[in-house]
Image 1 (cartoon, rainbow, N blue to C red):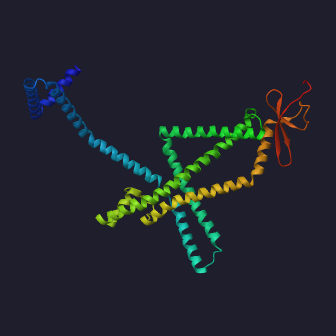
Image 2: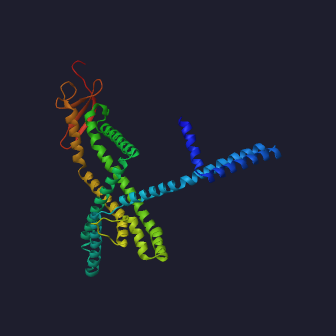
Image 3: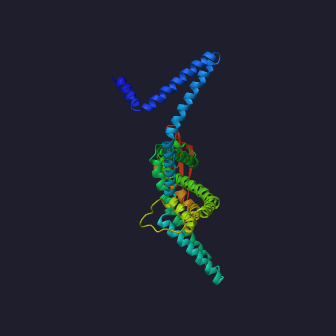
Length: 370
């Protein structure tokens, strides 16, 4: 019934267009007569001609399919490209905080330049340099935090993003666990499997540190590539394209075109529009600020670790002793004041606590039973 209904609807649709039905009938008739003529006059090449006719018909139908799909495919490609433009625009959007701190930085640079020209005194160099570094680091902080937050949300919304973030977290935990076990082995000269609680504690401390190091390295690499890309794009793409558009159309049209790329059709009602020159200055300053902020943070963190290294090492050893060691009540070949941790068979790890350091060693435990 359904098949008959489809055939009837097909015939009805064909019958509703007499011209189309007549054209198809004539085409089929001419094709059949041509095929018969070929088979009669060229019997040897009949098979090849039939194959060519089939291929030509197949090609014709594919061309029809391509022409039918062309408008929708082009529209989808354009939409995807424009969504990519929107995503890049949102990722590189300059917040008010970032613009404020960059404006303050430029003001301080100009003031310092005028000050040095007038006074010829370099005594204020450290002050101006510190102020510039603080302002650039503040701008980089707000900028990097907002961009990482936006990128994480976008990545987490996708399945591949969830897999990448989860995989990165698992890899960092694995590396942190391996580093913690290696450190415990170097510290106690014993197998770290006998200190599971302290190993877990070190892993929980190393994981965020490794995450911060990985994030810092990625940010530094991204800022370096971004700085190079911004310079190349501004020098070899934006400026020549702007000059060409001003020559072909007008300066207003070029400004409107780049403003459309930067902010879309409509900008926010409460936003303050910046001049194009000022916007490009910010795009150049942003990666520079990120690089300076990363250098300041890394150098400060390294200096702090170096300065407090002895205190950190001693506190770490005290925590290890507190978690896994006990007073000696069994080993007769060791002092009763010694602190020991049981290892395999009759071996123990001994901790000798001094005023500023704790020394670990592995010894055999001799008891009265032995």
